[in-house]
Length: 467
Ligand SMILES: Cc1ncc(COP(=O)(O)O)c(C=O)c1O
Image 1 (tube, helix red, strand yellow):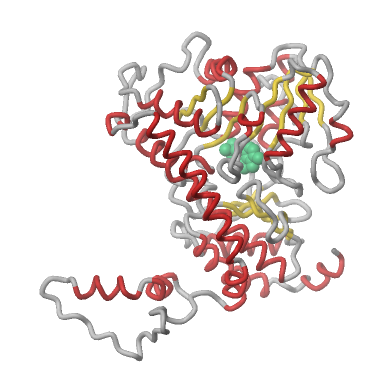
Image 2 (spheres, helix red, strand yellow; image 1 turned 120 degrees about the vertical axis):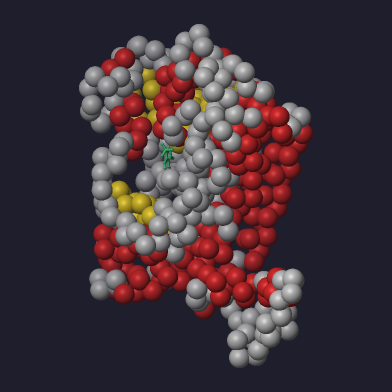
């Protein structure tokens, strides 16, 4: 089913209106042989049957997502109104950025209010989530301090920031005399509460909590779990600061980590809070002192947050993206629910399980072979609006130890708030699916995916028997 015919099916009346409103044009007769409509005015089912059945079965789950979107969208709208945002805030700036029209401060204030933080710095100058998290880590940690990762190993690109994967001399935390320890996850992939109860030491200056699963087969953390973990950490050492890697978690629940005691959170604008249209950037939010310290790492000590130019139209896109973000996150969650439903019913292991409440926008599927992982990514790329003619190949990427394959036929380079999937070429060959501006695109993509994984199913039976 091509995208064109699906649009026709979904909007038949719009199509008729457009045709007949051409000035001077003779309306083209719509003949029965071209389109057939049912009683509701829709033509035949736009999705393959297996996907269509899953969509029908998820009605209640989708409705709950709509409620979440409404809740978060209302919070964002209120923050825009409180910051009295006007079009004068959208102007670009050059050079030092001293003459910009107040957009920087308004955007920071909105973001802080939305996540329940004292302060925030939202900037196009953050390269990525890794960069924002790195600035937050360097804000807290000094020589002799200990960093404790409480949710198992942190995301791959943080290994060199911390110094776990050796690149001596590049200025990792380890180069600066910061030590590192990890609380491994429990067997069920969740936090290990027993170990955490005694893990925090007097020298532990920063506890690091990764909210989303990253490239691990683990559970993403709910806000109540993050709240419980923060309580346990602070009880053992009140001066231990808590940093939450918030990537992929924003707007997935009705609360954000600063509302339950996180000292800082950090993330990327080409993920959830950029609403699929922020062209670049990241953020750090939380307690004012520490946001300022992270800002000093982004810029330089003493420069603070009142400089840095953002040329062109970028400020408007950051505002508009943040406004759209709750809605886009809702679409991504629906895409994840659908992916889990369809692939679990084929027998694949999925994380999170179908219909369970979501704590991030990522849906992981264990495919069990590199061939199937590559075929899956190729099918997704083929179904994307941009670069559909490109065949993705696994390769080395800055910051990653394993080869990774990415399918990201997206408008913004590497954007994972848009429909995309990727995965490291390592056992158990898991594909991580995320993003999407409309869940219906996932429904089309899944039709394509079902076809190719069937074609690559040589070892599928053996795989299911083993697992
Ligand atoms: C949980 C988590 N943290 C951090 C990152 C790094 O973000 P970025 O790719 O923007 O540097 C990712 C990337 O996917 C992630 O999944």
